[in-house]
Image (tube, rainbow, N blue to C red; front, side, top):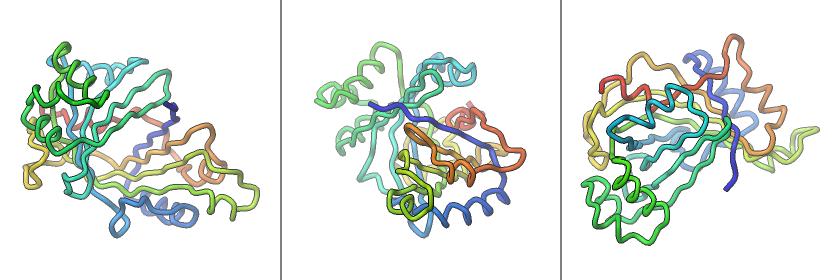
Length: 235
């Protein structure tokens, strides 16, 4: 499993408009996009002591978090993801869940999860049993995602093969407060405070100079922003 680099920047809507034009010139839209954007819904897990939240706030060097996620209001394709961070580098494991497994997570049905043959589901089940991990809150947001492809790279003078580069603009971040019924499209979510637009840049071995230059904004610096953390402001 590869570790990836990740930059996060808090930007405003004017920044986003300028970046969008630049990104469209040298990158392609993510395949999930509908009219240039898509909706993401995640359900995050934490224990009774809010370990994942506190480790993020305190900047613990080695940490992990579990979430389930689907796109564009379609719960027929749901991913279980485990995101780890070590020495500033990120790693993500994911597996598609069956309809029964999705419903079991929604209902906290341990029997279905225990019987799963998928290692990541088994790990989630074990940590729910031994560490008190449980669904905590829903996080909704809109994403515009851009991918740097080999074809585009070869058309730019002096470029080498891209390093699996992905740039996203995330906004309209909403929280389910303490709600966890993530399968209900009409469940109530509210804005997570005065949250800015989040620019994320992710890559493997190297970040091509054309992308490094493209995402530079005056007065904007890398931050440790967490959608999960801001969506816990109400509890």
